[in-house]
Amino acid sequence: MANERSTRRHKSLRADFKLRCESQGANCHLCGQPIDYTLPSSHLDAFQLDHLHPVKTHPQLVDDPANFRASHASCNASRGADAVTSVLGTLSEQW
Image (cartoon, rainbow, N blue to C red):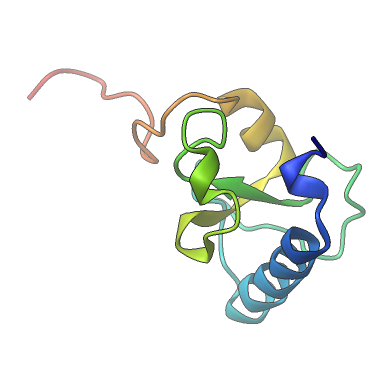
């Protein structure tokens, strides 16, 4: 079976999502910092499509734009297939 993220449909959805994020100036949903949309995809701070619900655990959502989020390549790699816990980081103390 071919990699689900290499299909023509997924590539088109990804390109459309990147254009929409770039036009809106979307920040990384993981760290909250701006994304430089002009960087090549090999750069750690480049845009990368992330899935809010990981494809590993929710393969049915791979092509669902409602599951797409803008991220830095490095933030996405750091997160891996873990669930998103907080975009604010670690609390300094429990409140």
